[in-house]
Image (cartoon, rainbow, N blue to C red; front, side):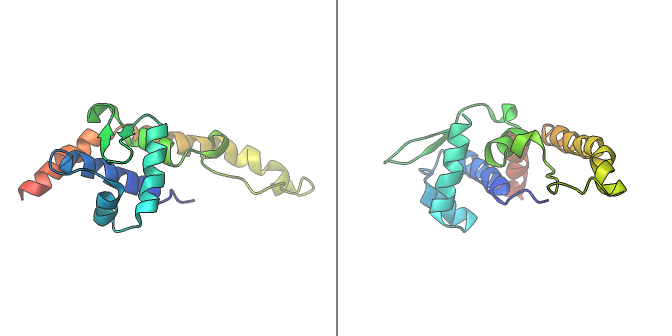
Length: 144
């Protein structure tokens, strides 16, 4: 299991928009330069963030605007926009464990509740961090 790099790219996008938004027009090309990736990838992620209502994107002339105060957008919000879990389950199970095998027959009983608890712990931890935390920490780093 691994959360895709799109999640950290999305956080990078928000940090760039907040850091440079008053000085530069934030376009997919601008963001791609900071992230060091292809603008097409950036546009796909921007589309996901827009569909989640976290940003607005000006077509043609370019520009990205964050739709809510940074302290109201959690890492979990970004994660849900970028890497939504399939069927609500972070962990996917191998298909059709052998019901004739005592382990195969009972593996869901052994793991389902534990894996759900792990998922909830991760999600709750992600809800503790906001984009405002990134803004504050970035200001500290830029002051050094």
